[in-house]
Image 1 (cartoon, rainbow, N blue to C red):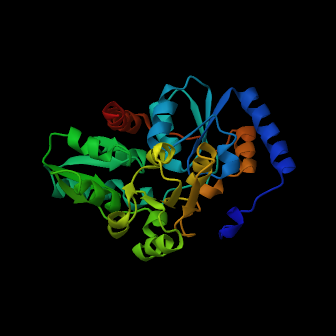
Image 2 (cartoon, rainbow, N blue to C red):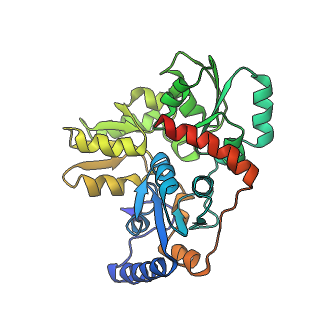
Length: 316
């Protein structure tokens, strides 16, 4: 399956993978480390993790970990979130160049300008942001709890940063006035309504599930709009047996693992995040062996960012 995509990712012999896994597990024991991975990671990476989840699940789990070292298989803002919530642990990002383009779309200066423009608005930052943006926010959210987070604030106006598509989705679910910053997920933004319609023609009767980071016109024609963890639960509980998936391809691995009798089809081959795919077993080994890519957050920023994250976790 992976060979159908354009990043040079190919399936590897089991003997090769087994040797790499053996080295990883030895290093993990030596370092007393815990490995966590996002749902969008490569299957081989998900398979060596102690825990796999979405942004909310990973934030909650890393906050609770009692360990010396957390090896984070994801992108930069996720590892940064782990460090904010668990400052006593050394957090190592499994690939130094694994960044999030959406998180880079808003700077501290941008946020300050928008806050000055809308002084009465409560500030909700998607967890897909830097520590500095979290620190300047009233509360964070994930795709799974974004509506509940917005509803938890007393403000009639909400400045929602940085994802315009998730912000638009939230605006359809609340009576609050949502002021939307124009950032977006490069991967989810690629998916078009035409591709959804074509996939439906190829798989008639399949249930269409998309992520709220997708464009409004894609969300509007989907059967269900869910975060990745919600997609997994939905697929497991649904009586349907065939699904068209509108999120990053990495999720298909867990969907198949947890629902072996059901069928899942990626709506479009463009649903692949090159940054999530920068982590390989070799980069995990190198990171652990040399304790590379250690995440640091200035304490004044960490304290403010943690306050926004703690409020998010309290909403659930």
